[in-house]
Picture 1 (cartoon, rainbow, N blue to C red):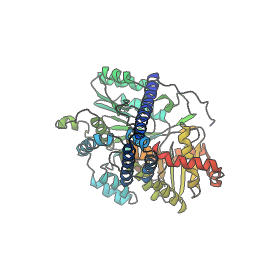
Picture 2 (tube, rainbow, N blue to C red; picture 1 turned 90 degrees about the horizontal axis):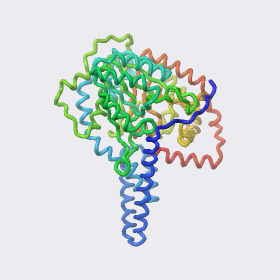
Picture 3 (cartoon, helix red, strand yellow; picture 1 turned 135 degrees about the vertical axis):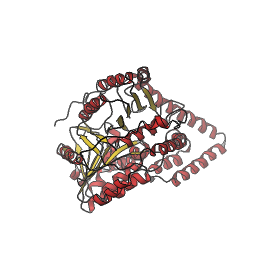
Picture 4 (tube, rainbow, N blue to C red; picture 1 turned 90 degrees about the vertical axis):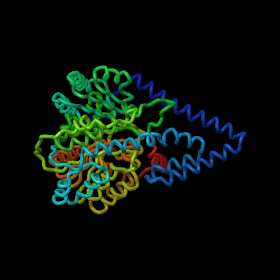
Length: 523
């Protein structure tokens, strides 16, 4: 497939204005505070000493945190080297009040909702008998994180985002009770138009329709008018972590999930957002490759719980679950018998609990691979733990492959991605770049019997900073289609393993990439 003509991305003017204003606001706050303190320090020595002491205390507290060292070190260096500017930047972007304001509420709501999705221990025992090599990961997700493993669920895989969108539209037409839509980005354009029309019709017919989107993710595509329009049509609409310059500049923690739930019976997730470029209606970065899956059956209940947790957590007041009848209607008894007998386990990941669920799932899949483990990810910015797992698997003879984009959407981040190639391929990992364009899918498959599809990139943002979701599959028929899609992507890609194995980088390029590796966790 040849590279497609790169077109200019059309952005919503309002969104661009808000983003520019937000960026200028951050710059103004940092500059004003820095100039003020530096100016005062010239006259009051104790102010300078005080900031140095505070910087040291913050650096020590950062170091003592139970989180990945790669996340801590860039901040520690910046804060100690430039106390005033470093502390200001950290307080604005690195130390989010989101943790303090949402952690307890999120936990309380999740506990309430977890009562609606208890783990069926018979399924765990069945998995112990039929898939013993996978049961420990399933028990980690269900026991430690309250994401049950299910059977009686059919899984359909979509190798192209547009096919997933068409299926979503058809299923929406059959909605009778409720529709929950949670997406990182929504663009009020051609791709979303048929869905929007159905949502408005269903709301008018009395269906409980709710839309939840991330403010930063949708900034380029829609503005406040979209929310007002939806609410005027009877659709409940909420925005995650709105960007409010000077008041709420804590933008690091975003809702990166993509979830659609219909009546608690059918659910969708995958890599694509609801915007034109994801369906190749526009081509800003060549051919856009994305994937998704459809669940029908018992496992959809976890999608419902994930959505409701986020929905209620973003209420201005603490929600009440005293009306149990109203709450339980979102978890109906499902009269459904699946054709597939595999194990299906939807899961979420949150930065509020300091538990890197998404990364742990990936590492577990790599560590238990015997023949092969393949990944596709738009961004490759890895922790030491992830690198160690990938390289050790390759050294013990596992066929480890990673597919990254051939055309980047963010050139700066793309250089960070490529900076990891040399260390990976030197240990036997194979790297492929998807030459037709930008591969935005986030998937893993191992040995043809297990894998995951979802929203989780192989980077620090997805592993540690964003709200994410995925579906762990074991012995499901859909894994055959996922395997075949990997084969197609590999055939359409250029293998760059040997190129980076030689590592003919200049000293300047090596130095630049070392710096990029150091600051990568901040981006």
